[in-house]
Amino acid sequence: MKFIKRLGYYLSGFAIGLVFLFFFLSGKRTSCDYSPNARVKKNIRIKERVVTDQAWTFFENQKIDTSAISKLLDRGKVDFKKSNTNLDSCKTYHIEGNYKEQELGMLFENCDSIVRVLEAFLVED
Image 1 (cartoon, rainbow, N blue to C red):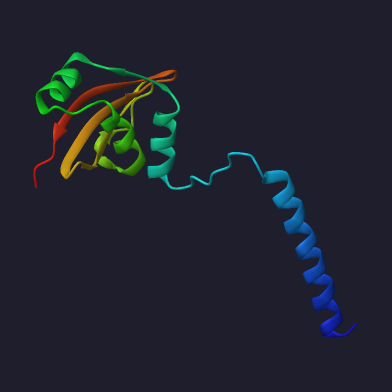
Image 2: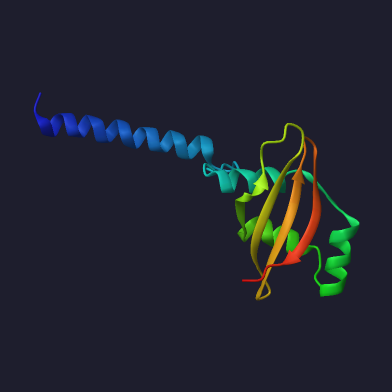
């Protein structure tokens, strides 16, 4: 079989496969969160959040609303050096990012069913 004919068979099968993928995956919320940073933030985002009194006090003093938590989980970066991931029950993650031209950081306690915002703080260089 000549190369051109094999290439034609390959491309036609590839095109059929793409059509099937497009048909089956259209309308579904699929995501490819493979990096550790993205997986941790996604895991925190999908759980119920509880904000501690210390974090509430910080938000009130700095006049920041709780949408900062969602923005930080969307655009922030997990600092694994400052996080404690060796715990069995509830791991703590240190996430930093920009919010309204301020460098904001938060400490999250990620348990099985809920996430606690333990503290929030301004990051100084």
